[in-house]
Length: 238
Image (cartoon, rainbow, N blue to C red):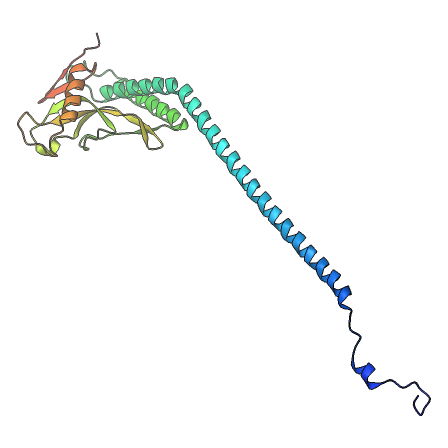
């Protein structure tokens, strides 16, 4: 007791806090570690679920793309006869329009409505080309003087030329070509300039192209061989 009558506290007991027994701290640490382990396991399970979901999405996307390709292939097969018919209609109207717009010397005098008919046929051909464009098929045209391209042109006539610069070039255009997405569906039918046998070629010899052009000129139903200022038409369809 102090002189004032209050209980006296020893200095040793005031300076040192009560220590927690070691046996009571261990369960708390174990419980905290158990929570951390459970959270880590849950995070790992979520990661696996995300991977599975991503894999399922990839499979679904691949199946959808394959289904779309199959549907496009079936649609293309269904539309092929329609495209072929439109090609023929386009070629006939364009050919007749050109004939009426630039008649041959042997044709009879122009009737009053000949020019109007040529314009009408040209408009019909353009309408057909527009219809094909709505199906994804684009028309490409060829101009005389362009280099002959076997991947885009089909030779149907041979034109003998004396100028090496005109060899292996387009000399006449019988029909336009059509392509879809950069793939040629129908080549343009053209006449090709060829030097006489033994003449120097502008771009070097190509026996395969020569054979194709000669075969087209001799075997195609509407192939033409141009000689000088005249034109001879060979018809072998019959």
